[in-house]
Amino acid sequence: MPDTDAPPPLTGALHEAEAALAATDPAARRAALGRLCAAARDGAAALPPPGEAVNLHAHTVYSYNPYGYTPSAFAWLARRKGLAAAGIVDFDVLDGVAEFLDAGARLRLPVCAGMETRVFIPPFASRVINSPGEPGIAYHTGFGFAAGDVPAGQADFLRHLRATAEARNRGMVERVNAFLAPVALDYDRDVLPLTPSGNATERHLCAAYARKAAALFSDPAELAAYWANRLGAAPEDLPDGPGLQAQIRARTMKRGGAGYVVPDGGSFPTIEATNRFILAAGAIPTLTWLDGTSEGEQAIEELLDLAEAQGTLAVNIIPDRNFTPGVVDEKLRNLQAFIAQAEARRLPVAVGTEMNSPGNRFVDRFESEELRPFVPVFRRGARVFHAHTRLRQQLGIGYAGPWADRRLPDRAARQAFFEDVGERLERVPPEALHGLPS
Image 1 (cartoon, helix red, strand yellow):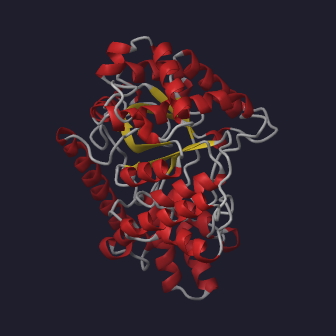
Image 2 (image 1 turned 180 degrees about the vertical axis):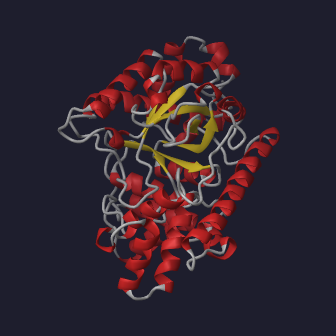
């Protein structure tokens, strides 16, 4: 399914180069991007001036992207779309970070790279936060990784995340196979090839089940009858494509589903341990906020106090989930209140659409009446994260860590400094920082 919100494809040789950004070989992607950058310099591929919109939260093929966007492809399309800044956030891995940051530098596109995972927050063990139906469990992020490699002392944390996720997936497949028989997956053959580094997610499993069922039941009526039986819906009510995959996930992998196992404190790392890892890896611990409707997120001041006490320095929002154009409702009021909290606490705000499900937008609707008042907040956050990334890369200093704690202990001064650096970096090439003293 094409991403209809992305810029239209190029033609001729440039179309071939753009298509090559989806190649499995990273070297081939780099070469293709080089051809496109040369075409842009020569005027053969027009690139618009940057606008106001940013997307710092796009998943790539290294976790799950339904359009097959590699780090290079997303960077190129973001530049062609006229984004002011772009960022990737993959689940449990940093595999795409180096490629994405390199692509951003070559395209003169302000960028940052993050990682998303799930954490356990003990004081909220009885309250749902932002992972529906899972008390105490929260999606959590780190933004501003300056490299795909982490210090040797932190490598075990990443290995543990991957091993735990794979064990959880394999157990889930075993249980779901029994529920969906005769449709069944072989994890190694049917799932692992769907992701370049073997980092499969629940969305990969759903896509694989949908594909396996379609191969087994070639007659559309038989296929519909099968899914109607397994998902408890009338055949005429079954959605197509992404809707079906979402229904498979809800019915088999989420709370109450055949493959679901209630997580406990040992299923995911604590927020404290995760923040230690993020800080040690040179990134910024970032609280991810959903929509303020859960019991945990309604206690937002308590949640933010706890998160900050354990090292959190920024927040992440997916704006398009939080409003309906032209409607003033609870979600919009929650969004406004949460942004006010972040501003009062001097927590930079990272925003973006995830693009981890078909139909997700390429970029949030910054032009909407609901989001337009917050554009300065979102641009400020993008500048902070980009400045942190480039300073970490070239000078070894950043928004988080000993240098910032010593030189900029006041949170307002720190935010202002990094915003100013980020704004300056929009006008000069990335290499301009080389040779500067810290």
